[in-house]
Length: 259
Image 1 (cartoon, rainbow, N blue to C red):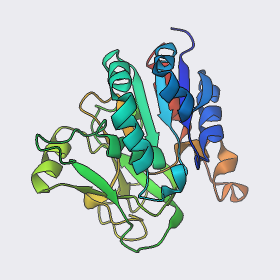
Image 2 (image 1 turned 30 degrees about the vertical axis):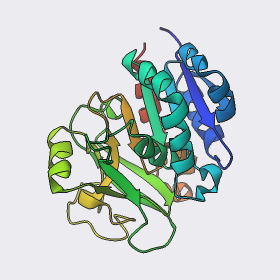
Image 3 (image 1 turned 135 degrees about the horizontal axis):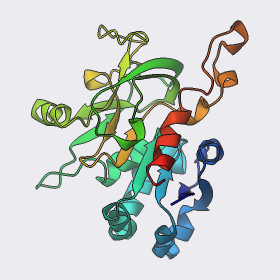
């Protein structure tokens, strides 16, 4: 497939869909932004796409908790269609609020036999919204979106981003399965001695992003779409930053997966 199509689902409060669409377009994909209501009316729209993306923002104002309303709509009305989308070998990406939605749906990490979630994204340890740039490192080779990426420098902007697993056994299993594939570090050398603000939310094992068992569903709290050009770097006028920005490779990997 020469040019895969990315579907960006938006809902009231979504505010990063334009940037995410632009990142996919710069990577060679066709990107369409479609309101969640249209997907609820006609789930078969998913059949026309190879990548499903849930962008950052505050869907439905995060009034109950971040991502819960969209997550509930997915669970009750779209699970069959989205699970078929995944079974067909396609890709699903959730950024920030999109990550929160994927956690709430159980698509990313399946519920246990009792229906209890494997993990959640809780309020930041500092009990405050965090808007800052962070260093990140990858681990394992399972996640499609992180192919050939060792480290990144990206911004975060969230209040509910603290990854917490149900128990230590769940954490150990996820780590052994290479699903805890993106973590916060203290510097670009991957220093493991991490504390606030390098880990901006207090996530267990400094987790910033998680993939499913196939590596084709990926959720992360940092915003790769906000650093796809050197001029997006906060200190680019001082000569810092990469060209292209660190986030672009993630979108290129998604597109190249279908090349």
